[in-house]
Image (cartoon, rainbow, N blue to C red; front, side, top):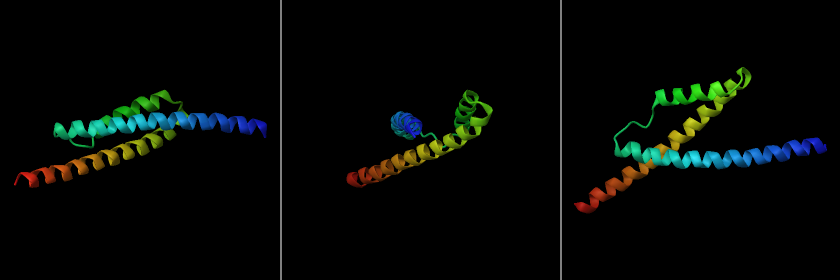
Length: 102
């Protein structure tokens, strides 16, 4: 059982590291949303997602590649959701600004 506890302790540390990196990525996704809005770019860029997936899968062995694709599909969905939320908030703010000038 002591060995299992060691595995779990290491897994907990990895989970903490993953969470911190995930939060960095999501903060950056917010900044990207603001940039895309200012440049009138579409939120969804399938070519970019495919580019990222290709790089990620190349880092994995054959067995883990499929799991990396699944993980990144989820990460992409979370990033798009976060970006959509930012754009929606900005649209509401823009609507209020227009209303204040009238």
